[in-house]
Image 1 (cartoon, rainbow, N blue to C red):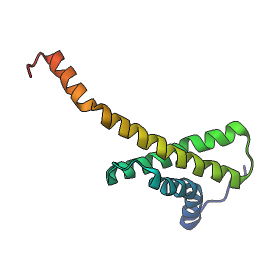
Image 2: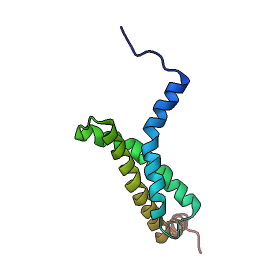
Image 3: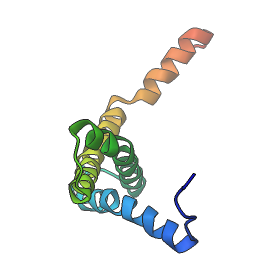
Image 4: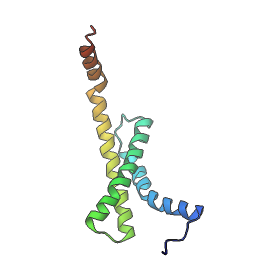
Length: 116
């Protein structure tokens, strides 16, 4: 049974970098489109979420559309990261505006019958 030859550390690192650079570049580009009130932690979370979303949805979109070009697949990964970061940032801003913490606090107080 002929398998692939074992990869060295350098070859594995290059293979990983070639899969990660399009989402990272897409996330870095879209950081400038973050909401004005976003903190550095919000931006870092959104960037990491955009890259993660791209790593999950990018290959799924490539398989679904039947793309065989590596360049197009990397473009899809970058685009998913670009728009995914913006969507995640808006979701986080919306959750902050909804003040979920206060809602959950009041809900727990009502369950435990704690007066305000």
